[in-house]
Length: 292
Image (tube, rainbow, N blue to C red; front, side, top):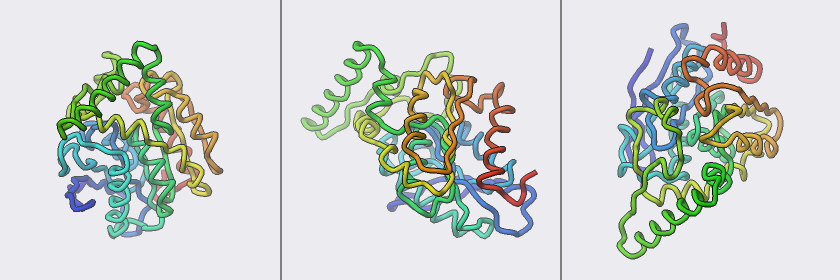
């Protein structure tokens, strides 16, 4: 069952969808907050696939649009990392009040940018009982350098950000850039993006990402379980990002590097295997009474 909901975060109304497993019999269930990717959407996206997967596994799931994205309030595309952490924490507060949910067993998951937000949120909010990161990143500066590996590409990226900062200082208005100048995605992989994803961002969003470091708090997640799931040949978010977070994290932690579609491990051709791997981990570290 799916139910459209709204909840408040810092005075803004956020739009979400709650997934309730078919086997729900009134017994409170563990749940997951599902965070969408970079200026993405809860709908027609990896976030929707993740939420439906969790529902199939026997968890309640809440996928939602961060502020400034999708159907949520806020100036479109004016995304800031710490605002998204606040949204995730407020999503947890909302979900914990649902009668279907065990408030002490709420995990968080997300893909790409949403995974970075998930790790950071779990690191600063002890209410998060479990974290499953999919192709996330721990250090924005390191991530961007990996995404712009040549000197020419890096200099172009830095120049755009510096010019954007100067423009904001001089005019008080944002300068805008293509999402692909911030996070390059090969054309063949762009079909995996949500059709509702935003295509241009203010340079302040890229600055916010550059300064965002889940690395700094990932160790705080222990002793709550952490899975860092990443495609082994990731050309969008460098695979090394999950490796570095794993090195800093405490136990229990697990790192799975999967040789599959770059950056989109739940793409249709790969989903049967990758879902089975995630389910095996969840069955051990964060089981649900509805596990089959």
